[in-house]
Image 1 (cartoon, rainbow over the protein chains, first blue to last red):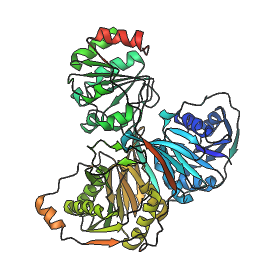
Image 2 (tube, each protein chain N blue to C red; image 1 turned 180 degrees about the horizontal axis):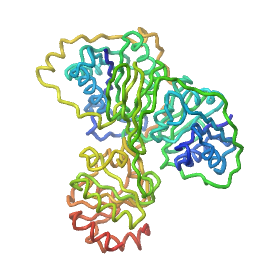
Image 3 (tube, rainbow over the protein chains, first blue to last red; image 1 turned 120 degrees about the vertical axis):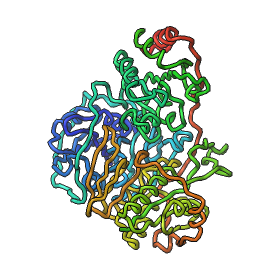
Image 4 (cartoon, rainbow over the protein chains, first blue to last red; image 1 turned 60 degrees about the vertical axis):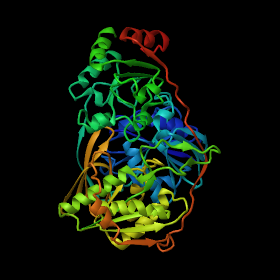
Length: 309
Length: 249
């Protein structure tokens, strides 16, 4: 049976997380269908059709799906999902919001946040903030899976030529409504897909000082992240948080500035290829995972770093 | 309005977990246990709703071994009015918990169910959404703000791009994110008072739910350890290493 991958998108652009989910799906089986549930989302479906390894794209285009309300989208996915062996979504906030609802409607378990596929029914996932790695076999006929994007390479965005098929009908549960959103607008790359990330912690002192990180980030083409402490203190917004309950990242280079390295933060970034820690406290736990540590005052070091890049 | 809150007994968030040497699971023997931090935020939010006059009664629910009553007593000390413990020593998966909660929701008919978005042991982030599906309720997951206006719950959610606000017809489910509130500490008089608050015990069979395993835990291993690297003395040296040794810039 085929595998249904739920596309992550904003009605105009297919988000990169979908490509990682397609790769994970390709390790579970080979007949991969991508569902684009949205409103006026033809461009997303066209982009999904070009993704390498995708056999078919289903486009459910309806106002009820415009804001990805879980109450509506889950009804659609559960109805379609009955005919699939696997229903897979990236573990984005959308995927995490909708997929358990789908699993319950299908009366099956969900395996969350997998980082490896062992076989069509066996998956590897971190538990306890990544301090243990569990191998789990899903026993239900339909496997409902969310995929940690850092665990899988992105499928090629070009090279496929899948047919796009429209899904008729609309599912509007009519119990929830979108009111509004505050979306951060940035010219920098997205945190979850950036090759380089510069992150600040409580040591930054205030939000303005994050300007120093932004200058370094701009030189490196990097995204700017933050620890929970910096977000809780109100220095920066929540969408910048890296950690167990924030974003999980694995860039080529992660520069942690003024971050002590609580296990909850490490859970979100310790799979980065190269980690740099800049902290004036040489006992900070972040140095235990850093490839390069610099014990120094960040306020002296960051302007120097900017100048030398 | 009645508010239902759920609490899970988990390893204390400060404790570093160890994997058993036979790789069957993590070792929780003699480990400090506590109320899941996200559940604590859920209890706090319910108490604030009651203090604001929006909620009239708070019912705390937990499922699991007898020891989970400690966490229910904590919830009672924080301000819950009564507690329900579904006692079982079997391993409970999210779907089973959601099914049992759905039965309790049927009986109690709360206007709001407030739950932690995830438990810090299994890191599943599933149960609230599953309960919402089974009870046909809307869900405001990863909430950083909750307002009740008439028959609607306005929930601001922490999403990947920033914040999103949704309006939910009540009864509804809210799952808490870290910044919804800062939980209070239970005072000693309230801890004493909590011992006398009602705590009802049920079994899965009482709720008509069969505890079944839909997944099988094959093994649990420690993660690949990352070893500490080197300390550099200056920014010059750091930049040189990143360019020529790590080759990442």
